[in-house]
Length: 612
Image (cartoon, rainbow, N blue to C red; front, top):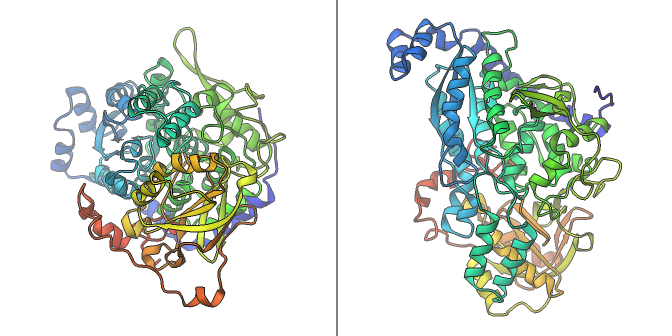
């Protein structure tokens, strides 16, 4: 099963420059891990401290913790029963505690972190807290682990900002082993392309709200992750290809025997890799520059969420590594698009999993030299173990078997020899308007270049009102500005997509340019997003006027305004008063985040502020 392949020259080049760029920061980070491991804190806690830590435990666990010679596992959970993807986690702590006891250890819930649903907050004020919730989750993770009573931790989280926040928090305790345990995707419901058609029909007034709600309820119908390939499922791909999941764990449905067996196995593995044993595997060493390059290649090969051009930068920084958008752009040139999962196709993640899933994807990328094989994972040394997939024997025992070497459905996942697209699904744009990201995998090639007059808006509501009034009859580039992290927290803007899709289907050339976000569900309309510098910082997007000719060129990687150069040079940027919109739904509490947050191409993080 060994795959011998020389690492692609571009992959090696990008990896080497990340390592050189990050040398001092990474060395400082690893020194911190070494210093902490040299004096494990839990073994040095005072008696009163220890007594508080196990006071509420049952007699068996209390005796084991009091003796102090068994591994202790912390559970950091993002459980709530409103999020479909996180509702299954209600059962996990008991399952993990039982598995830990059977393996000779103990487990406790160390703490909870918030988990909000972008699907619920789309187009609403609460969405302005979404991106910032990532950094709140990182802080909450640190609080959960601050008691310093654990030898390893498992992390229960799956959706949008939750997994990146947990990773950042876990890396702040980089000396602890960390295993991420997914809950899995919900079973397939109403096909995503049918749902999209009904959304668009509603935007045109062809169907009523009852029909729309019925369609949405049939699409989002049970426990588990939404089945389209947005940020949540991109998170799961990343955790597996970067070595923080058990092999094949990402896309097994919730509340099934195999899912429970994988959770038990993850618990056992977390206890096996503490510093008390012979396989000590701290998370800070798992997530090195090679793991992050593998993640970016996986992102491109699957047409994953554009949110990860923010999240991966912020996650890497927590490990002392410096990623840049140039790294994403250069890797996109050699990483082919190998999947068609909605919105990049009609299939959902269950179809992808059935057609070969992660083991097939990793096999193809490894065989082409596009991934680093010699990495450390929670499963051991080398990514080749992830060519296997888990199964249950007739007696219920969990075993791993070699995954398929051929795609079960070439319309969903293909090999490197016949990709859907020769280059990755993301592109970085540069030009007069600054820098931006565009997702090309869901956009047909003839729309990769759009040149049309600008129509400027400062809110989603302004655009929706203009659409409802029938104001759009010619080609246009919609400019939606003052949506960046400093302005209002950088919300996702998916409520723009159905009406923009309507205009495109009417034969208009349409594009979106914004300093806000769209994520993995970006869809068929070309959208230059994450524009930086943002309008609130006086970025060039704030200088655009209605009628300016805008060129969005995903072929050449350009984002330009075609106006008189002298006029452009002397034009003053617009200003917009967000003070009213920054109140209510808790937004006033996040003023300190808006003041502190850094640029989009620096991860839009409060931990890497605007001055860095």
